[in-house]
Image (cartoon, rainbow over all chains, first blue to last red; front, side):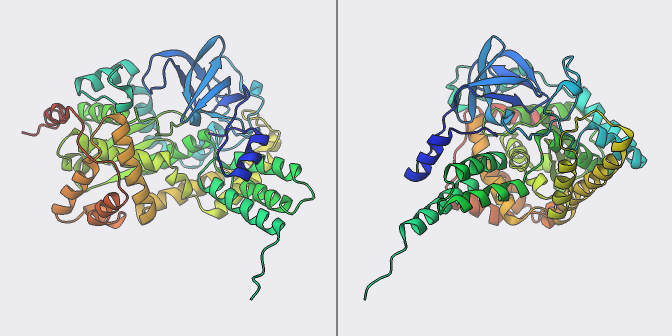
Length: 165
Length: 311
């Protein structure tokens, strides 16, 4: 997670040696290609909405490693590692959900699809291996309901969930 | 004899330095350190601790890490290097099963999620191999899978590799020289927007690709030749045990897997890149990691045996 902290609180925390983390409804950006906004603080809790890389979400509360966020008119939970408040953050520049890359204001050029394309061009011997990887990425998909059914069949119950999944 | 005491300002500086060190060590992220340290330096301008805050901000800037999406693209190309050397196991049922076990481990909220999610790829070969590329591409040999006695031990094997990804051990293998070149190019490109390559940018794209290639080489070399340091392997073990407990698998499954490969006499491919099984077990025990077997282990063992054709 990359979130800025309440400065006054942080200075006080430094003086007292205690951790103070306060969020004043901070707007942060999604760093994953897509993220489920979950109903509860559980990895496979029902999905209320899907946010995409560079989308803004508003942090309402923090219960590490979870953040309660507002996205559009939906409120739910995501993991801290899914967002950044770093103004210098580097995004992929991938176009998603109709947002053109040039509209993703904070996108600066780092290692991204353009660089990978150039790397592939310079290393044609890797073409077959890239095709294998892409077939795996596109073909091996495991939706939440399949994972949940697998967990239930194997009687896998994360302790924190108290069997309430 | 009169003992000379440090001045209040020196004490304040030492206290601040200690707190900052502990804070950075706890891993809040370089951007947080940089941003907050700069703000603190402004707030304490003129005081004896301003320089400490200012220096901390610069330190964070110079060690800025690759972003989540950059990690993904680095990981894809590292994975391609691995796929150049190993064949994907053709049994799709086995691949699906291993992926579902991996996804179940990821129910642990401690696992850091990646740009495009984790994938678990069984590769051919009876040697014990486990390699995880940045971004969540986990490669496990059929031999390593078959050495597990049940699903919980397979989950432990995957949890160890997930921990390497989650803790960004692969990205940490990028050498300082490569990082410095990356930072310099990023600074040159500040203000530019991804997706807009003009003729004037072509040189920068070529340079960036060259550094990208260096990063791939740095990581591939560490993953496949030298291996992670003993400390990183042991750190992955401890985190794996935590993930197992949080996910609902048996926390002691990693120890039992390691005991199994230790008794089997040697570690094949792992022998070159991992500490000994005995060393790893001792470390898990000495750190007081969670213990015990999770409910339903027999049910999962029967499923494991059916998928792997074990009687």
